[in-house]
Length: 599
Image (cartoon, rainbow, N blue to C red; front, side):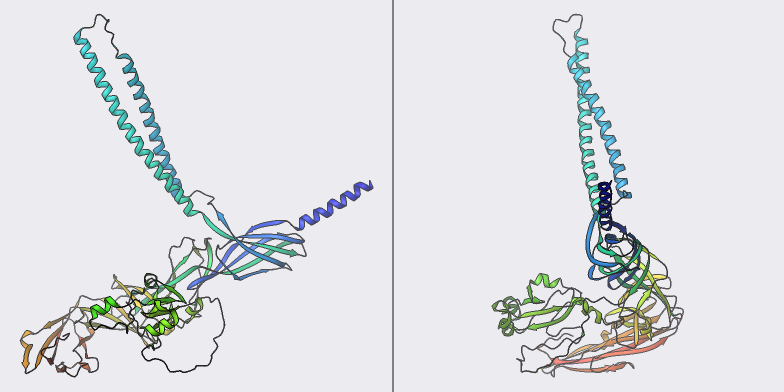
């Protein structure tokens, strides 16, 4: 009895130890998502029953990519978290996808047809074998006439040929069907692999003083979600305000579907560091004027010629080469080296850089570049520093803390596809006018001017234009502008007609000694074919000389506002329905007759 009692105590103690080390697996529920321009903060809840003592808890249904430094886990009890480990699971979909089911049904149909063809082929082959076995006619057979023998041979020949052709035809069909089954099987495999997904899980080592059920709150930042602004601009007519629909195009590939989630959108970007800048001493020194590059203060980079597209298509470093002929200089010029974040890359790789990702650019000429990067930089160097995640906080919108809370819960699948989220609708008073620069484009553009637009919390983005119920196209909302008035281009209106014609009778060419004098005259005609009056602004221009040997004189401008520095002429007028107005521009240019100018 005593030995049995001791054994029972030992078993009880062992059971208590093992009970404290039990491993639980629970699924978390995603409750809310704060989506930043790049990245998102996800908040989950989970329930788990814990034993007294040490516990190992696995919480799954977590994003497959997280910033582990941002991970926060809380509980409603005196649970002590001893350690946390993040990992990922490779999962196969539990339910068969509809497209896979459809493909498998097609595969079954093709296989049924293959089986039917194989039955036909087997039957035809047996008939062919039977014909071959029975066509032997012995020479000693009697009672068979020549006519009967000829008829019998003709039958065997015809039937054999018929069966052979049918066998050949069905074998070809069977071959094609097998090729189809191979393609379907490959497609099924690709679809299944495409829909395999990885999800994250958290492995927690816990100490629980009291057994019971506990609630856990989990939050973290993931880089696998983002949103971009989008807009719809609707103008019923030019007497009504602009209807602006502020939307977001949201995408996420976190590995978990967001089902019935409380959604918030923020205009800021979570930074990986929050260190305040430190101002250090600024030491002046003499520099080689030929190597000095002005700081970057505008949308253009001093010393760099770049295409207007987001990708950097070309950077030209000037100031090297010795020949005077431009074509020869281009041929003999040595390519600069391209240095990005301290690493030398190829010109092709440099072209792929999105200009918006550049923090600073410096162009070094040959001597200075060679001193830093060696002889390979004898053609100069283009030194680029790219933005870090924290640099994006200083976007020109100055709206870093605006948050849009979405009242209705959203479903956002983890498929990377854009999903539209409506944020706000505005009715914005606007001043409308038509604008045309017929020297460049003869169409008239409807423009909307909006004041006090800063309160709308807009971000730069594209907007769909719907004018008088018709989709016109897209325009860009420049919310990074520092102007008090936001100018919106609302599309072309063909009912406001603008023409610019050269008047040959009032244009001439004269030779005055060593000089040549050209006189050019243009007439601009504006017609309002709309049913209501319109405000119109028209711009034209005359050339401005930058050379003392070229003299320009404005002869006629018909009341335009003249900017003598730029040569831009501006007319503003109101046109009644059906009204026509004409403006004439005339100017003369005198220059040496042995020269050619860009007139």
